[in-house]
Amino acid sequence: MSEENTTLSLTEEENNMLNALRQRAQQISSEIGAIEIRKARLIGAVSSTEQQANDLLQSVAERLEIPQGQSWQVTPNGEIVLSQEEQS
Image 1: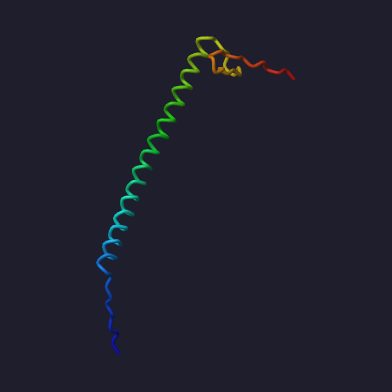
Image 2 (image 1 turned 90 degrees about the vertical axis):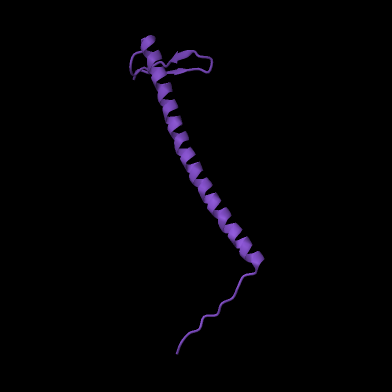
């Protein structure tokens, strides 16, 4: 007993639409890939910027002779506030 395949066809409009949708899906996938690469670069840039900020703060601490382990912070207007360590 042999099986026979039946072949049906899309209309030209359906076929064109399907091909356009496949192409658009491929473009979207490529765009997502490009965004992921850009995301990775931006994450690297954030990391580098944070390291530069930490290096600057370390330099400031050394210049002002703030002892290592001393808690301090910089206010938005550029003042440095040393925290008082509570003695127990």
